[in-house]
Image 1 (cartoon, rainbow, N blue to C red):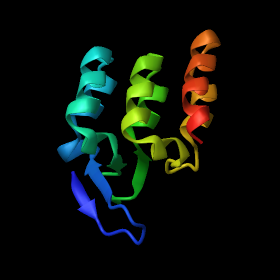
Image 2 (cartoon, one colour):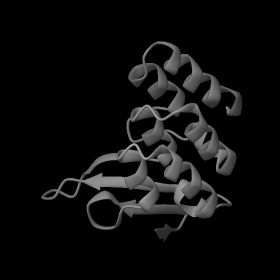
Image 3 (tube, helix red, strand yellow):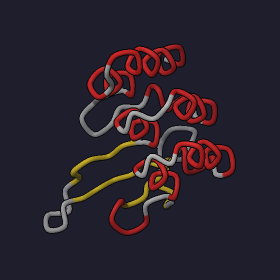
Image 4 (cartoon, rainbow, N blue to C red):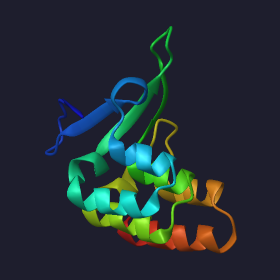
Length: 126
């Protein structure tokens, strides 16, 4: 991940989806939940890394998310969401490019009991 300058106390890490996406994101996208959970522990920097996808022509940001946002969107088990939050609890209060918190995404993308469990995992950290 590439470190960007940030005025806050902690640095911001960003990777480009099309050229250097993190392995953690690839595992989440592929629904490899056990491996993703292990990767959170072995590579904590990837948990804090924003994944950005830009338009190939205009270079405008199409979307920007943390692995926590991705886990919620891909309906990862609560154990994966909890692992991400354990490593980077601040992720629960970070908004994506659309101004959405992971909690918002949990209600949008998850169904039934999974939505309640995921929301419950994300909400206490806010």
